[in-house]
Image (cartoon, rainbow, N blue to C red; front, side):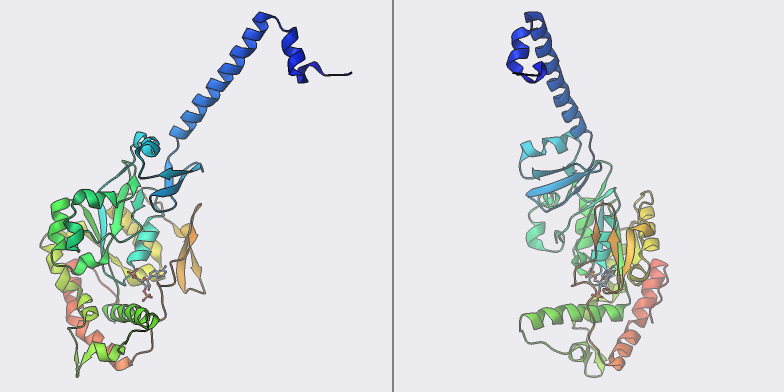
Length: 343
Ligand code: A3P
């Protein structure tokens, strides 16, 4: 029988001296220990790039492409992240509104920045009494894991129009940075109407026309919430009475739609972050009619509920709305020191 000695374990071991056997065992054991230590070092030196799914069981991906699954509710499972200084932190920046002005787009685009971690869902901590009464620790537990050098953020557009919110946020952290995105107020009303109208139609609920809601006889109906939300200067007064102007950065939502990068770079500056978001992160999607995002791990457009086609409404009603907002817009520009190309 022909046999290659090194492939036959029994033959090899039988012919070895005790010394050689001891040597081989030591070499194998050392290799094993080295592999183990190497593996641990490799894993503990990764930077977490993102958590890919919401809690509690979530996949993660590191900056070096390592992926895994964690139970975020389980402390043992989280030891690796705690060791890296990852924690759920109260936000250092909040998008406070305005509803239907591009709050989701702004947050999604800012998440392209490696130094930003953002909560996916709207937390509604400061505007809903039942959440606020649960305390700051409840709020913190709804924030994403972040590294000490990252900024964690959330967006809840209802904050902008809710009376108690500026005071409550101030109490949490008087130095928190606030982002406010606005767009042409009349178009915002139409966008707001479109969202509510679509939901009502889908649920087969009764619905009124835009004209019926916006007009009260020949006047603008200020009882309609969507109309009041677009009176930006009225709401901003409350915020400016609590926070210094420099702490509230205004994003132009119409410009964010047309050309997102300059708006995002202004936000990077405001947050004290290096410019990392660039034109290479965007492509224009002809079908959607909006910019979509891409980087090494993302290639996505916002959901279909963003960028809905607005219904055709009577031009004279839109015109009336625009005239109605004129004084509020002038006041808003005066307060913020920014110019907007609203009609
Ligand atoms: P419309 O649906 O009326 O077009 P919010 O996230 O605050 O609800 O705002 C929704 C609005 O974001 C949309 O209003 C849309 O115009 C705007 N938006 C801005 N950038 C967008 C993008 N890249 N993709 C889709 N919608 C975007």
